[in-house]
Length: 216
Image (spheres, rainbow, N blue to C red):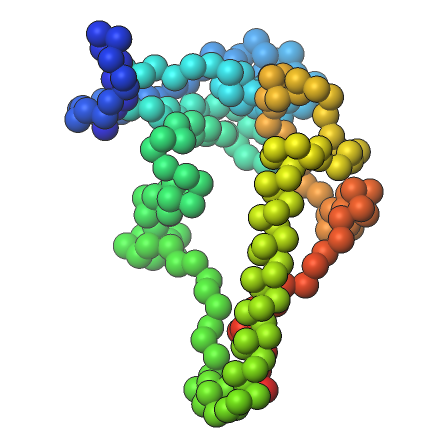
């Protein structure tokens, strides 16, 4: 499918023939790579990805392209950047599509598998089901807490989006920051660093209660 604009009409979806060569981009970054070789080739990748966030996509063909940066970085021998318009899918669906296009290294004919949480043992489920009135009360109490917290979140969101202001934090940007050029940076941080950010922003974790949290 392709998004097409013609005759001033509203954009619409039409069937199209995908020519893969039109979506493969191999930019010439030799000059930039040489300039940054002494410092960090990762900077070249970050600069290139940042430029993609402000470059418009060609709406005369399917809204995706694959950029191949064929030079080594600190993490890989080469880098590929897949840019997809959000109208084609959200993050979850696009990751599912990406996984469906890959195969296991140990078995080239098998699709990759994602670890999932194992179900509760049968004996535990029988014990949980036989709790009677006490279990029912626990489920009811958990539901009331969940409903109350949900109501508070909805009221807080409504107030913030209408008349209230966000709480100032060290990460709060100045007015108009949403119009500044975007930049995507790859960094590896430790859990302790994340905790420091949480403490600096005065974030308070609230325990999440659900009916499945109670097991007699």
